[in-house]
Length: 201
Image (tube, rainbow, N blue to C red; front, side, top):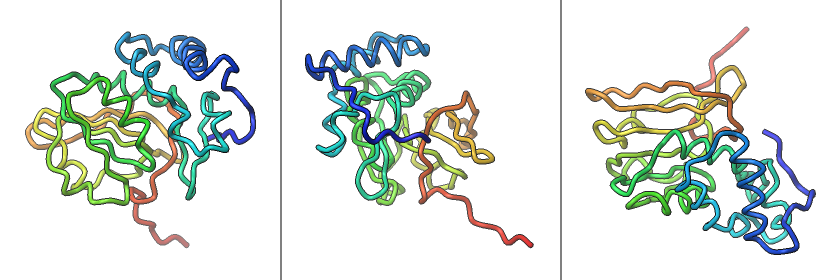
């Protein structure tokens, strides 16, 4: 994942102009064209979810470094996630991630109810949700994660495959949850979802 630190991108005309530029130059040109999703991006100030010192790079087409080693994924990553998820007003959404706040705010413009839990938090006790969004990439799918997806519900997450992060969509059918990889995407790996390390000689 490429993380931007210094390049200033927030337009002098204001954050709304910067959001419109982000939508036109990063999202629309990459296939994120759902009008409701684009309206959510326009309504949520991305700079509110980064440290004050990094606000000038909030709208760069790269991940933004946050505190404690976390990163805010590029807007395109979130656009791809929401496009795959197809959230509706009937959805109860669980967002798991570090930080997760920006994705939760976007989802809140599209879904009926949104709950945010840190990847290191007690998300396993959050109950069942019709849609689960994981703000980061996982190496393996723990049973506890499958358990928070309601019957016929879906999950959208990043996955790590041989060092490459990709976007994946899963659906829970007959009690089983399976992930289908959709495309490469720019995610940060989530340490709590790392696969157990194996001995090698």
